[in-house]
Length: 396
Ligand SMILES: Cc1cc2nc3c(=O)[nH]c(=O)nc-3n(C[C@H](O)[C@H](O)[C@H](O)COP(=O)(O)OP(=O)(O)OC[C@H]3O[C@@H](n4cnc5c(N)ncnc54)[C@H](O)[C@@H]3O)c2cc1C
Image (cartoon, rainbow, N blue to C red; front, side, top):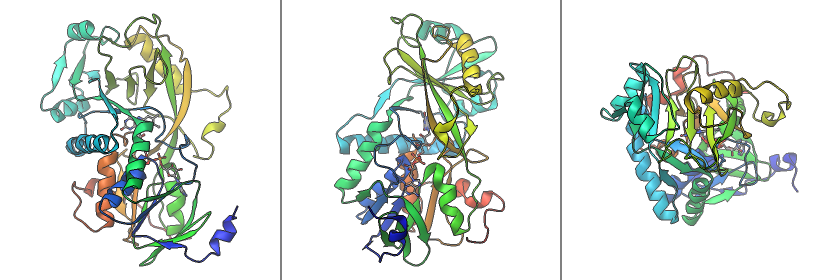
Protein backbone atom coordinates (compact mmCIF):
# COMPACT_ATOMS: atom_id res chain seq x y z
CA UNK A 1 0.00 0.00 0.00
CA UNK A 2 1.28 3.45 -0.86
CA UNK A 3 2.03 5.86 1.96
CA UNK A 4 0.70 9.43 2.08
CA UNK A 5 4.25 10.73 1.54
CA UNK A 6 4.59 8.55 -1.55
CA UNK A 7 1.39 10.07 -2.98
CA UNK A 8 2.66 13.60 -2.39
CA UNK A 9 5.71 12.97 -4.56
CA UNK A 10 3.87 11.22 -7.41
CA UNK A 11 3.36 12.74 -10.85
CA UNK A 12 -0.19 13.55 -11.99
CA UNK A 13 -1.88 10.23 -12.76
CA UNK A 14 -5.00 11.41 -14.53
CA UNK A 15 -6.81 14.52 -15.68
CA UNK A 16 -10.58 14.90 -15.47
CA UNK A 17 -13.15 17.55 -16.44
CA UNK A 18 -14.21 17.74 -12.76
CA UNK A 19 -13.22 16.27 -9.40
CA UNK A 20 -15.76 15.99 -6.59
CA UNK A 21 -14.48 15.41 -3.06
CA UNK A 22 -16.81 13.46 -0.76
CA UNK A 23 -19.23 10.71 -1.79
CA UNK A 24 -22.00 11.53 0.66
CA UNK A 25 -25.38 12.38 -0.82
CA UNK A 26 -24.36 15.94 -1.84
CA UNK A 27 -21.09 15.03 -3.56
CA UNK A 28 -22.66 12.00 -5.21
CA UNK A 29 -25.51 14.06 -6.69
CA UNK A 30 -23.03 16.72 -7.86
CA UNK A 31 -20.99 14.04 -9.62
CA UNK A 32 -24.18 12.52 -11.09
CA UNK A 33 -25.25 15.86 -12.65
CA UNK A 34 -21.73 16.44 -14.05
CA UNK A 35 -21.62 12.96 -15.57
CA UNK A 36 -25.08 13.44 -17.06
CA UNK A 37 -23.68 16.50 -18.82
CA UNK A 38 -20.94 14.30 -20.25
CA UNK A 39 -18.19 15.71 -18.05
CA UNK A 40 -15.49 13.17 -17.28
CA UNK A 41 -15.81 13.22 -13.49
CA UNK A 42 -13.83 11.72 -10.60
CA UNK A 43 -15.64 11.27 -7.27
CA UNK A 44 -13.29 10.70 -4.33
CA UNK A 45 -14.27 9.20 -0.96
CA UNK A 46 -11.92 8.74 1.98
CA UNK A 47 -13.68 5.66 3.41
CA UNK A 48 -14.51 2.34 1.79
CA UNK A 49 -18.18 2.50 0.71
CA UNK A 50 -20.70 2.04 2.13
CA UNK A 51 -19.73 3.63 5.45
CA UNK A 52 -21.55 5.08 8.44
CA UNK A 53 -19.06 7.74 9.57
CA UNK A 54 -20.57 10.76 7.84
CA UNK A 55 -24.11 12.18 7.53
CA UNK A 56 -25.76 10.27 4.69
CA UNK A 57 -26.01 6.70 6.03
CA UNK A 58 -29.06 4.96 7.49
CA UNK A 59 -32.25 3.85 5.90
CA UNK A 60 -34.55 6.84 6.24
CA UNK A 61 -34.79 10.61 5.84
CA UNK A 62 -37.86 12.86 5.82
CA UNK A 63 -38.89 14.61 2.62
CA UNK A 64 -41.62 17.25 2.62
CA UNK A 65 -42.87 20.23 0.63
CA UNK A 66 -43.48 22.41 3.65
CA UNK A 67 -40.63 24.65 4.79
CA UNK A 68 -40.60 27.69 7.04
CA UNK A 69 -37.96 29.29 4.77
CA UNK A 70 -39.32 30.18 1.33
CA UNK A 71 -35.94 29.65 -0.33
CA UNK A 72 -36.07 25.91 0.40
CA UNK A 73 -39.82 25.60 -0.23
CA UNK A 74 -39.23 26.95 -3.75
CA UNK A 75 -36.65 24.23 -4.43
CA UNK A 76 -38.79 21.32 -3.26
CA UNK A 77 -40.88 20.76 -6.44
CA UNK A 78 -37.63 20.49 -8.42
CA UNK A 79 -36.23 18.14 -5.81
CA UNK A 80 -39.28 15.83 -5.88
CA UNK A 81 -39.02 15.77 -9.69
CA UNK A 82 -35.31 14.88 -9.60
CA UNK A 83 -35.88 12.15 -7.00
CA UNK A 84 -38.49 10.64 -9.33
CA UNK A 85 -36.05 10.87 -12.22
CA UNK A 86 -33.43 8.97 -10.20
CA UNK A 87 -36.02 6.33 -9.27
CA UNK A 88 -36.74 5.84 -12.98
CA UNK A 89 -33.06 5.74 -13.96
CA UNK A 90 -32.15 3.32 -11.20
CA UNK A 91 -35.38 1.28 -11.57
CA UNK A 92 -35.90 1.34 -7.84
CA UNK A 93 -38.25 2.91 -5.34
CA UNK A 94 -36.64 5.57 -3.14
CA UNK A 95 -39.67 7.29 -1.55
CA UNK A 96 -42.65 6.19 0.49
CA UNK A 97 -45.42 8.78 0.72
CA UNK A 98 -46.72 8.80 4.30
CA UNK A 99 -47.79 12.43 4.69
CA UNK A 100 -46.28 14.65 7.35
CA UNK A 101 -47.73 16.53 10.30
CA UNK A 102 -46.17 19.81 11.51
CA UNK A 103 -46.99 20.32 15.19
CA UNK A 104 -46.70 23.68 16.94
CA UNK A 105 -48.39 26.44 18.87
CA UNK A 106 -51.19 28.22 16.99
CA UNK A 107 -49.82 31.42 15.50
CA UNK A 108 -46.17 30.35 15.72
CA UNK A 109 -44.36 32.33 12.98
CA UNK A 110 -42.52 29.28 11.58
CA UNK A 111 -45.73 27.25 11.55
CA UNK A 112 -47.45 30.08 9.69
CA UNK A 113 -44.58 30.17 7.18
CA UNK A 114 -44.90 26.40 6.75
CA UNK A 115 -48.61 26.87 6.12
CA UNK A 116 -47.91 29.54 3.49
CA UNK A 117 -45.40 27.23 1.80
CA UNK A 118 -48.29 24.79 1.26
CA UNK A 119 -50.58 27.43 -0.22
CA UNK A 120 -52.64 27.45 2.94
CA UNK A 121 -52.33 23.79 3.86
CA UNK A 122 -54.84 21.74 5.79
CA UNK A 123 -54.93 22.42 9.51
CA UNK A 124 -56.12 19.44 11.52
CA UNK A 125 -58.10 20.07 14.67
CA UNK A 126 -57.16 18.17 17.81
CA UNK A 127 -60.24 15.99 17.26
CA UNK A 128 -59.37 15.15 13.64
CA UNK A 129 -55.77 14.47 14.62
CA UNK A 130 -56.93 12.14 17.41
CA UNK A 131 -59.23 10.30 14.97
CA UNK A 132 -56.71 9.95 12.14
CA UNK A 133 -53.50 9.56 14.12
CA UNK A 134 -54.41 8.34 17.61
CA UNK A 135 -50.76 7.81 18.56
CA UNK A 136 -49.99 11.51 18.17
CA UNK A 137 -51.30 14.11 20.68
CA UNK A 138 -51.44 17.84 20.65
CA UNK A 139 -52.32 20.06 23.58
CA UNK A 140 -54.42 23.14 24.18
CA UNK A 141 -53.27 26.03 22.01
CA UNK A 142 -51.41 23.78 19.57
CA UNK A 143 -52.28 22.91 15.98
CA UNK A 144 -51.29 20.31 13.41
CA UNK A 145 -50.61 21.18 9.78
CA UNK A 146 -50.90 18.43 7.16
CA UNK A 147 -48.43 18.07 4.26
CA UNK A 148 -49.71 15.21 2.13
CA UNK A 149 -46.51 15.11 0.04
CA UNK A 150 -44.36 14.30 3.08
CA UNK A 151 -42.75 10.91 3.37
CA UNK A 152 -39.66 8.82 3.79
CA UNK A 153 -36.65 8.67 1.47
CA UNK A 154 -34.77 5.37 1.60
CA UNK A 155 -31.40 6.97 2.30
CA UNK A 156 -28.88 4.13 1.88
CA UNK A 157 -30.68 2.90 -1.21
CA UNK A 158 -30.73 6.45 -2.63
CA UNK A 159 -27.00 6.90 -2.09
CA UNK A 160 -26.26 3.63 -3.82
CA UNK A 161 -28.63 4.50 -6.68
CA UNK A 162 -27.12 7.89 -7.41
CA UNK A 163 -23.59 6.46 -7.34
CA UNK A 164 -24.62 3.57 -9.63
CA UNK A 165 -26.21 5.92 -12.17
CA UNK A 166 -23.14 8.20 -11.97
CA UNK A 167 -20.92 5.23 -12.87
CA UNK A 168 -23.29 4.17 -15.61
CA UNK A 169 -22.84 7.62 -17.17
CA UNK A 170 -19.09 7.02 -17.27
CA UNK A 171 -18.10 8.54 -13.91
CA UNK A 172 -15.19 7.21 -11.85
CA UNK A 173 -15.73 6.62 -8.12
CA UNK A 174 -12.64 5.91 -6.05
CA UNK A 175 -13.34 5.07 -2.41
CA UNK A 176 -10.84 4.42 0.38
CA UNK A 177 -8.88 7.35 -1.02
CA UNK A 178 -8.50 10.40 1.20
CA UNK A 179 -7.81 13.85 -0.23
CA UNK A 180 -4.75 15.19 1.56
CA UNK A 181 -4.20 18.46 -0.25
CA UNK A 182 -5.74 20.72 -2.88
CA UNK A 183 -3.46 22.99 -4.92
CA UNK A 184 -5.33 25.85 -6.62
CA UNK A 185 -4.59 26.83 -10.21
CA UNK A 186 -6.19 26.95 -13.64
CA UNK A 187 -5.90 23.20 -13.35
CA UNK A 188 -6.55 22.33 -9.70
CA UNK A 189 -4.32 19.56 -8.37
CA UNK A 190 -5.81 17.09 -5.88
CA UNK A 191 -3.39 14.93 -3.93
CA UNK A 192 -4.86 11.86 -2.27
CA UNK A 193 -3.54 8.99 -0.19
CA UNK A 194 -3.15 7.02 -3.43
CA UNK A 195 -2.65 9.41 -6.30
CA UNK A 196 -2.49 12.87 -7.85
CA UNK A 197 -5.24 14.17 -10.16
CA UNK A 198 -6.00 17.40 -11.97
CA UNK A 199 -9.15 19.10 -13.23
CA UNK A 200 -10.20 22.61 -14.25
CA UNK A 201 -12.85 22.53 -11.50
CA UNK A 202 -13.07 20.92 -8.08
CA UNK A 203 -16.18 20.65 -5.93
CA UNK A 204 -15.71 20.10 -2.19
CA UNK A 205 -18.65 18.31 -0.52
CA UNK A 206 -16.80 16.80 2.41
CA UNK A 207 -19.50 17.11 5.09
CA UNK A 208 -18.11 17.50 8.61
CA UNK A 209 -14.53 17.39 7.24
CA UNK A 210 -15.00 20.44 5.00
CA UNK A 211 -13.54 22.91 7.52
CA UNK A 212 -10.29 20.96 7.72
CA UNK A 213 -10.08 20.60 3.95
CA UNK A 214 -10.56 24.30 3.15
CA UNK A 215 -8.42 25.72 5.98
CA UNK A 216 -5.17 25.26 4.00
CA UNK A 217 -6.89 27.19 1.18
CA UNK A 218 -7.17 30.22 3.47
CA UNK A 219 -10.83 29.74 4.38
CA UNK A 220 -12.18 29.64 7.90
CA UNK A 221 -15.82 28.59 7.55
CA UNK A 222 -18.12 28.68 10.60
CA UNK A 223 -19.02 24.98 10.37
CA UNK A 224 -19.84 23.13 13.59
CA UNK A 225 -20.05 19.33 13.44
CA UNK A 226 -22.63 18.00 15.91
CA UNK A 227 -23.04 14.45 17.15
CA UNK A 228 -26.70 13.50 16.84
CA UNK A 229 -28.36 10.74 18.83
CA UNK A 230 -30.53 8.72 16.46
CA UNK A 231 -33.13 7.12 18.76
CA UNK A 232 -35.60 4.30 18.12
CA UNK A 233 -38.53 3.79 20.54
CA UNK A 234 -40.50 0.64 21.14
CA UNK A 235 -44.30 0.62 21.01
CA UNK A 236 -45.94 -0.29 24.33
CA UNK A 237 -48.45 -2.39 22.40
CA UNK A 238 -46.55 -4.12 19.57
CA UNK A 239 -49.78 -4.59 17.59
CA UNK A 240 -50.69 -0.89 17.54
CA UNK A 241 -49.99 1.34 14.54
CA UNK A 242 -46.96 3.63 15.03
CA UNK A 243 -48.68 6.98 15.24
CA UNK A 244 -51.96 6.27 13.54
CA UNK A 245 -53.51 4.24 10.75
CA UNK A 246 -51.37 5.80 8.04
CA UNK A 247 -48.25 6.28 10.19
CA UNK A 248 -47.15 9.72 9.04
CA UNK A 249 -43.86 11.51 9.64
CA UNK A 250 -43.91 14.55 11.89
CA UNK A 251 -41.82 17.58 12.79
CA UNK A 252 -42.39 20.12 15.55
CA UNK A 253 -41.85 23.84 15.51
CA UNK A 254 -41.96 26.50 18.19
CA UNK A 255 -42.65 24.22 21.17
CA UNK A 256 -41.26 25.89 24.29
CA UNK A 257 -40.22 22.58 25.89
CA UNK A 258 -37.97 21.66 22.93
CA UNK A 259 -35.74 24.58 21.87
CA UNK A 260 -35.00 22.76 18.60
CA UNK A 261 -37.38 20.67 16.54
CA UNK A 262 -38.27 17.04 17.29
CA UNK A 263 -39.02 14.79 14.32
CA UNK A 264 -40.32 11.30 13.84
CA UNK A 265 -40.69 8.63 11.17
CA UNK A 266 -42.71 5.41 11.16
CA UNK A 267 -40.96 2.12 11.96
CA UNK A 268 -38.64 1.10 9.15
CA UNK A 269 -35.10 0.28 10.29
CA UNK A 270 -36.15 -1.97 13.17
CA UNK A 271 -39.55 -3.72 13.18
CA UNK A 272 -41.76 -2.13 15.82
CA UNK A 273 -39.32 0.69 16.65
CA UNK A 274 -40.35 4.24 15.77
CA UNK A 275 -37.56 6.74 14.98
CA UNK A 276 -37.92 9.95 17.01
CA UNK A 277 -34.93 12.32 17.22
CA UNK A 278 -33.94 15.75 18.45
CA UNK A 279 -32.80 18.15 15.74
CA UNK A 280 -29.68 19.15 17.65
CA UNK A 281 -26.67 17.54 19.31
CA UNK A 282 -23.30 17.98 20.99
CA UNK A 283 -20.34 19.67 19.30
CA UNK A 284 -17.87 17.05 18.16
CA UNK A 285 -14.89 16.33 15.97
CA UNK A 286 -15.87 14.00 13.10
CA UNK A 287 -12.88 11.79 13.91
CA UNK A 288 -14.02 11.39 17.52
CA UNK A 289 -17.78 11.12 17.13
CA UNK A 290 -18.02 7.62 18.57
CA UNK A 291 -15.62 8.16 21.46
CA UNK A 292 -18.14 9.52 23.99
CA UNK A 293 -17.90 7.36 27.13
CA UNK A 294 -20.91 5.02 27.44
CA UNK A 295 -22.16 6.67 30.67
CA UNK A 296 -21.80 10.27 29.42
CA UNK A 297 -24.99 12.33 29.84
CA UNK A 298 -27.09 12.63 26.68
CA UNK A 299 -29.37 15.63 27.22
CA UNK A 300 -31.27 15.01 24.00
CA UNK A 301 -32.51 11.64 25.28
CA UNK A 302 -33.92 13.13 28.50
CA UNK A 303 -35.66 15.80 26.43
CA UNK A 304 -37.03 13.22 23.98
CA UNK A 305 -38.30 11.03 26.84
CA UNK A 306 -40.32 13.96 28.17
CA UNK A 307 -41.60 14.76 24.66
CA UNK A 308 -42.67 11.17 24.08
CA UNK A 309 -44.60 10.98 27.38
CA UNK A 310 -46.50 14.06 26.36
CA UNK A 311 -47.00 13.68 22.58
CA UNK A 312 -46.54 9.97 21.75
CA UNK A 313 -47.97 8.15 24.76
CA UNK A 314 -48.08 4.82 22.90
CA UNK A 315 -44.27 4.58 22.97
CA UNK A 316 -42.01 3.50 25.81
CA UNK A 317 -40.13 6.44 27.29
CA UNK A 318 -36.62 5.01 27.05
CA UNK A 319 -35.10 4.39 23.61
CA UNK A 320 -34.58 0.76 22.59
CA UNK A 321 -31.71 1.63 20.21
CA UNK A 322 -29.47 4.70 20.04
CA UNK A 323 -27.13 5.26 17.10
CA UNK A 324 -25.12 8.33 16.12
CA UNK A 325 -24.87 10.52 13.06
CA UNK A 326 -23.29 13.87 12.21
CA UNK A 327 -24.82 17.23 11.39
CA UNK A 328 -22.60 20.04 10.13
CA UNK A 329 -24.27 23.27 11.17
CA UNK A 330 -23.77 26.85 10.07
CA UNK A 331 -24.70 29.64 12.55
CA UNK A 332 -27.96 30.36 10.65
CA UNK A 333 -28.55 26.69 9.71
CA UNK A 334 -28.63 27.65 6.03
CA UNK A 335 -26.44 25.86 3.50
CA UNK A 336 -23.16 27.08 2.01
CA UNK A 337 -23.20 26.78 -1.80
CA UNK A 338 -20.55 29.05 -3.23
CA UNK A 339 -17.21 29.48 -4.92
CA UNK A 340 -14.04 29.89 -2.95
CA UNK A 341 -13.73 33.72 -2.72
CA UNK A 342 -10.18 33.63 -4.15
CA UNK A 343 -10.20 30.51 -6.35
CA UNK A 344 -13.35 30.63 -8.43
CA UNK A 345 -12.92 27.12 -9.88
CA UNK A 346 -13.11 25.59 -6.38
CA UNK A 347 -16.77 25.24 -5.38
CA UNK A 348 -17.94 24.41 -1.87
CA UNK A 349 -21.17 22.73 -0.74
CA UNK A 350 -21.36 22.43 3.05
CA UNK A 351 -23.23 23.24 6.25
CA UNK A 352 -26.38 21.26 5.47
CA UNK A 353 -27.36 21.65 9.13
CA UNK A 354 -29.36 18.44 9.41
CA UNK A 355 -31.85 19.16 6.60
CA UNK A 356 -29.94 18.62 3.37
CA UNK A 357 -30.86 15.10 2.28
CA UNK A 358 -34.25 15.86 0.74
CA UNK A 359 -32.68 18.71 -1.26
CA UNK A 360 -29.57 16.84 -2.43
CA UNK A 361 -30.73 16.48 -6.08
CA UNK A 362 -31.08 20.28 -6.32
CA UNK A 363 -27.92 20.98 -4.30
CA UNK A 364 -25.97 18.71 -6.65
CA UNK A 365 -27.46 20.46 -9.67
CA UNK A 366 -26.56 23.90 -8.30
CA UNK A 367 -22.98 22.87 -7.46
CA UNK A 368 -22.65 21.35 -10.93
CA UNK A 369 -24.02 24.51 -12.58
CA UNK A 370 -21.74 26.78 -10.57
CA UNK A 371 -18.71 24.69 -11.44
CA UNK A 372 -19.59 24.90 -15.17
CA UNK A 373 -20.20 28.68 -14.96
CA UNK A 374 -23.86 28.16 -15.88
CA UNK A 375 -26.65 30.31 -14.48
CA UNK A 376 -27.82 28.46 -11.34
CA UNK A 377 -31.38 27.20 -11.71
CA UNK A 378 -32.26 28.61 -8.26
CA UNK A 379 -30.88 31.71 -6.56
CA UNK A 380 -27.76 30.86 -4.58
CA UNK A 381 -27.47 34.33 -2.99
CA UNK A 382 -28.79 33.10 0.41
CA UNK A 383 -26.01 30.51 0.52
CA UNK A 384 -23.04 32.84 -0.03
CA UNK A 385 -19.91 32.38 2.06
CA UNK A 386 -19.62 36.15 2.47
CA UNK A 387 -22.72 36.30 4.69
CA UNK A 388 -20.32 35.26 7.46
CA UNK A 389 -17.65 37.68 8.71
CA UNK A 390 -13.89 36.99 8.73
CA UNK A 391 -13.89 33.84 6.62
CA UNK A 392 -10.67 34.68 4.77
CA UNK A 393 -7.30 34.19 6.36
CA UNK A 394 -3.77 33.62 5.12
CA UNK A 395 -3.45 30.30 3.30
CA UNK A 396 -1.48 27.79 5.36
C1 LIG B 1 -29.56 11.61 12.15
C2 LIG B 1 -29.78 12.45 10.93
C3 LIG B 1 -31.05 12.63 10.46
C4 LIG B 1 -31.28 13.44 9.35
N1 LIG B 1 -32.54 13.58 8.90
C5 LIG B 1 -32.76 14.28 7.77
C6 LIG B 1 -34.06 14.34 7.22
O1 LIG B 1 -35.00 13.72 7.76
N2 LIG B 1 -34.25 15.03 6.08
C7 LIG B 1 -33.23 15.71 5.46
O2 LIG B 1 -33.47 16.35 4.44
N3 LIG B 1 -31.97 15.67 5.97
C8 LIG B 1 -31.72 14.97 7.10
N4 LIG B 1 -30.47 14.88 7.61
C9 LIG B 1 -29.38 15.65 6.98
C10 LIG B 1 -28.74 14.97 5.80
O3 LIG B 1 -28.61 13.59 6.02
C11 LIG B 1 -27.39 15.64 5.56
O4 LIG B 1 -27.62 17.03 5.32
C12 LIG B 1 -26.66 15.07 4.36
O5 LIG B 1 -26.53 13.67 4.48
C13 LIG B 1 -25.27 15.70 4.26
O6 LIG B 1 -24.58 15.07 3.21
P1 LIG B 1 -23.09 15.44 2.86
O7 LIG B 1 -22.82 14.77 1.55
O8 LIG B 1 -22.88 16.91 2.97
O9 LIG B 1 -22.20 14.82 4.04
P2 LIG B 1 -21.64 13.33 4.23
O10 LIG B 1 -22.67 12.32 4.00
O11 LIG B 1 -20.93 13.28 5.54
O12 LIG B 1 -20.59 13.18 3.05
C14 LIG B 1 -19.32 13.79 3.05
C15 LIG B 1 -18.35 12.74 2.58
O13 LIG B 1 -17.09 13.35 2.35
C16 LIG B 1 -16.10 12.40 2.69
N5 LIG B 1 -14.84 13.09 2.92
C17 LIG B 1 -14.57 14.01 3.88
N6 LIG B 1 -13.29 14.41 3.81
C18 LIG B 1 -12.74 13.76 2.77
C19 LIG B 1 -11.43 13.75 2.22
N7 LIG B 1 -10.43 14.49 2.73
N8 LIG B 1 -11.18 12.95 1.16
C20 LIG B 1 -12.19 12.18 0.62
N9 LIG B 1 -13.44 12.12 1.14
C21 LIG B 1 -13.71 12.92 2.19
C22 LIG B 1 -16.68 11.78 3.96
O14 LIG B 1 -16.05 10.56 4.29
C23 LIG B 1 -18.13 11.65 3.61
O15 LIG B 1 -18.43 10.39 3.04
C24 LIG B 1 -30.19 14.08 8.71
C25 LIG B 1 -28.89 13.90 9.18
C26 LIG B 1 -28.68 13.06 10.27
C27 LIG B 1 -27.28 12.88 10.75
